[in-house]
Length: 324
Image (tube, rainbow, N blue to C red; front, side, top):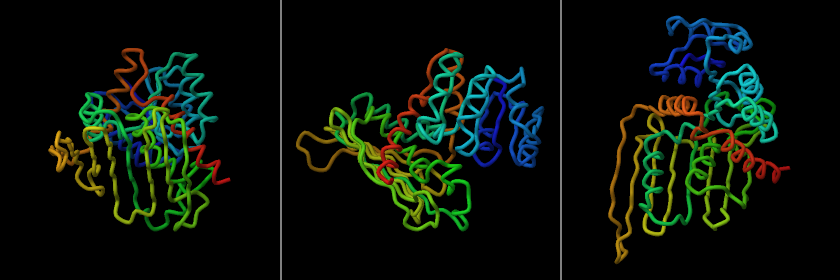
């Protein structure tokens, strides 16, 4: 597949470094030097100043949209209307309302749009989902998950701290991954409660989000996303009637990625335990791109799509309504 990237910052570079056999032919960024630097690292790639030039290239099969949140939906919509398939970073828009024209256009033009919920492609959550789907822990009871980091000096001046550009704070940042993973295991949530708060960072968006979500069948997801987690943390636990699956770490500063499968014994007491440990390299970006390419080839919805993004944004909206 021949690809174009719009947005050549940290995430755009991660995408570009995980292309595998696919070819990056053009890239663009509002900061031209970022596009020029990325293009120089990929043979045959051209840096452009305007995204419209990328969208207009007839030799580009698909666009990777890796920008701030305010640009995600407009650029995805423009790419669809230009006849391109799209992989857009989460949360794909600032609100569900902003996303709706994108969903309508994707249906109208029969374009595949994948949303960058790359945590589905980390080995721990991925294997946990396979075990869960295979009945390894029986019927779902509840999910408990925490995800956070502590920011950095000057974090309050970055685009993620702007309500206009980001649409929200930590709830839409790491919180969107937690909501998406919880839905992946539990299905849709019919009850949404919780609140968002700004405890530490002097910014107009939240630095913490607390969620209690419930499915129609009664399964609960209790989630906490934080920008005041002074030691980076990822913990995702799935409790079933006959056992538990626990993912800890994501590699790097989040610590080694590990899945622990606890199996209840007939006599109860201490469970049988199996531990899976994964290499430190993060292959989730490449695996997610391959899922996108397969979905394009097969003309189907990808794992992590616009419907999933709309559901995540709908949950977030409920909490933001509560904040007033």
